[in-house]
Length: 78
Image (tube, rainbow, N blue to C red; front, side):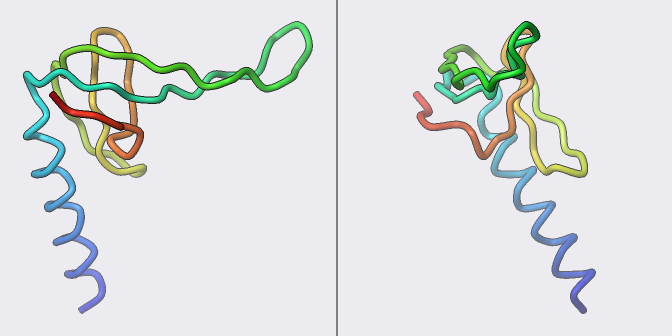
């Protein structure tokens, strides 16, 4: 039963994220650590039109140009 519920949740997440295709979104993009200091860099906000949506082990991912952003990081949809 729990596997079926997980699969249903995943389908719902993908369906919800797919409605973002063609829409302008604002999202937070995590940055890798600074290669010189090893210190974390602050997250950056990005804005653009969602080209496509994929679904993997981490859940739904929206693709904005050459950026891949977890759907959970989308803050605004226009």
